[in-house]
Length: 144
Image (cartoon, rainbow, N blue to C red):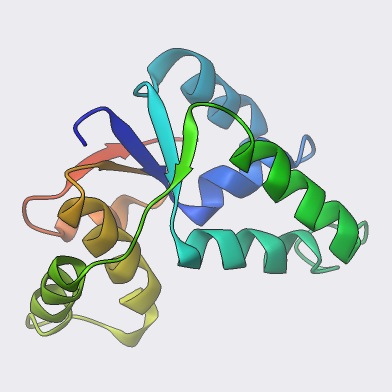
């Protein structure tokens, strides 16, 4: 879908945590620069739940499991937020990108998010500039 953004985990986290260093920038993206619809994939959903409950990530104030689920559920209930299904085409993109020379083990998760978005003709949105290295991927780099 050309009108669909797949925010990276770092964007979902910054949107959810008002104390996050990139909260203001993420909020500006959400309100002013986003495409009409947003999507979670399984990796970003699980990652958000995990990071919201992590004491170090949340500066000593982690969400409870129930609070993390409530935050995710609040996004999922919005009419412009959906869940992207993962396809065999995504797996093909993933295999191609991860087998390129120079691919490093620290990029597995980013490659999967990129592949899922690319297979759906969606755009990835992230604070991480490394997404620009995935050939053919529609990407919006949010600079903090």
